[in-house]
Length: 235
Image (cartoon, rainbow, N blue to C red; front, side, top):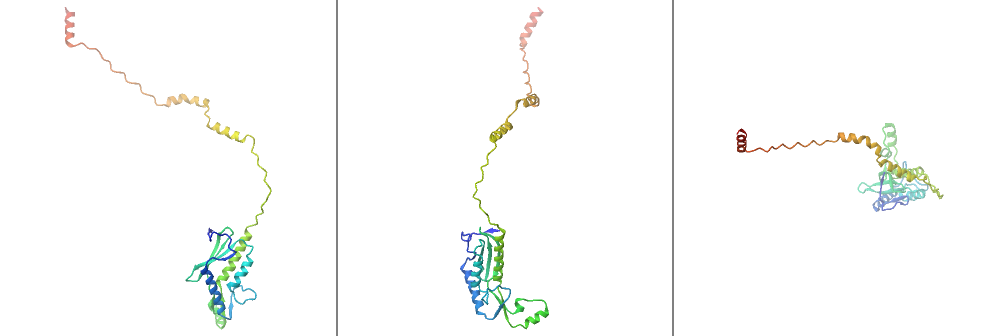
């Protein structure tokens, strides 16, 4: 899922066309359906009282069905050159739950062109049918998007808001004091547990080596004085 800005709006009117290019493309598809007469449309839900699956009719009906649904179906242009539209399913908060890229224009042709089959017997009898058939992939995707928007609404239950005031929760007596005391005890240094290790700490501490004694200096007499002293003692 991803969140989209969508012009800073979270409510789009359930079915919302976001660009003028997409509106022009849808009106062009309606004009094409009106211009081709006697077409039998396959696998398309056509409203009662109508013979063609026109967007101008179908959009009013889907808006009425999704009037109370907070989820949204967003239609935008995907590729203008290829006449492709993007259909996105968003919840009430603006989150995209699913997206489709589909052609806006209906397909008109023979039954073999619109519903090809490998069965030769069926292909032969379909070729004998000269009627014109049509399909609208865009309206099929829109039916799927409406189903997903309804399933989102069923998946989220309605929240009932209670106006009763909740009772105030009282803290346990002296709870803060007990916590502070526990923290202090963790940080506290107990002296009697440290004393047995003081002697060991001194033994393990690196001891300083004793200083070397200074060399002894003897007062020596000069050589001449020694000779004179020796002569005096001999005489």
